[in-house]
Length: 90
Image (tube, rainbow, N blue to C red; front, side):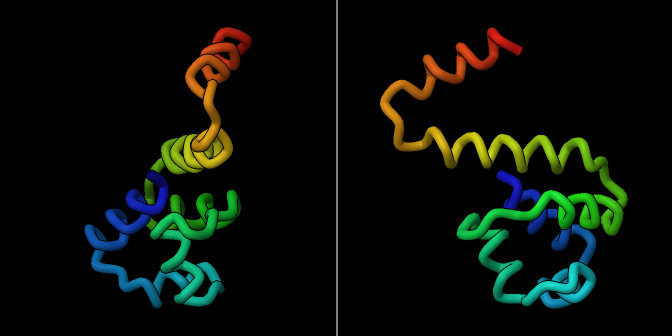
């Protein structure tokens, strides 16, 4: 989710992967892995990305957190039930 959104923001704004990586002070290969979902984004990088593309950091951080939750529950048998309990408790 979050990787797809970052790629979309880059493409809409005609920003190359290496250009964004330089602005974030990270390796281009690492950013590529993050966009593909092979590596997680860091929260602080998403705040910078929101500033760079002038979008809401709330949207990016929401997608980031959703990705984190999905990675944790992805292969679990009772994920829907567990997530429903979490939703009910917050």
